[in-house]
Image (cartoon, rainbow, N blue to C red; front, top):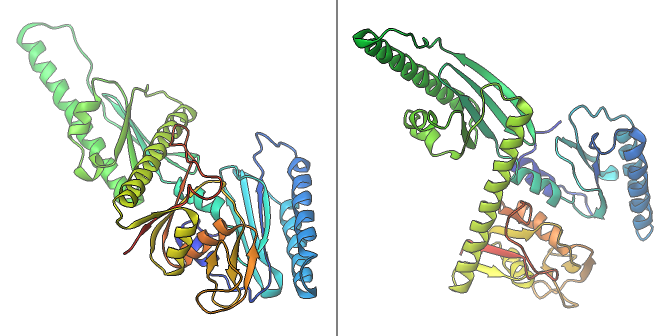
Length: 379
């Protein structure tokens, strides 16, 4: 199974199908909603039937390729061992000998498409929101470290230092003993900070959540390396006995907040640059023009947006209107989802794709006709 990252998506976007159709199938196989294999197998069959119907407009070779695509897809779905898999994505062009299977631990919306390239926006959204969150749970004696990525949690290590308890002697003995306790606890917090730094250097997590007694967190934070302090996104009060499910729930809530804030920053930068007439453009038409000129640094797309458009059969230029390509004079053909074509083009050019409208509490993106699309430009 391939590692799902932007490099993988760029490779998929660069598939050469030589004019043959590429079949893309997304399937929600979440066992919490669909406990029986039959529940998602029936939906897979319906989606594949839709691909068959769409292929009837193609030539003989195209129809044969799609028939082979769907047969292999249904074979994979039938034999799927879900385990922790909650979403399945399959991409195929049998006649061009192209195939890719992706399993993720998050649900994916059911969808099947036929195009000249894989449908990648749902996977791009997964990659975008799959940053890793490390939660360190610390108290006076112990520490636990958790790593959350793509909805999965793993407890990575365990740290324990024996901190002496209080005793009932008074006077100077009590004061000396209290200082000893404080020194041991300080050593424990320093040790946890060192373990956490080594863990970060090994795993390179994106964000850090500090959890534990409210009075202890500031002292622990002061002892962290600057690498770690810069990654702190939240502080939480959790008991050392917290179950992994509770830590996961808290981590996912923080992830939603981080994603919502990221979306706000992206849209604010886009608006500021566009309003000032600098390196940004808003609206699908302007974005397509910038993509055609290879000027897009980051493509900003509302999740779920789709619109028909046109593509030149000769040079691949994307546009919303016209009958003849203004670049090369070639013929323009209709594409069912010009937004997805723009995403594929951006990935091939090495541009970032920023999907907005994913997070609860994030900004509301308007523009069913494409006004919600924007781009930050290289020049």
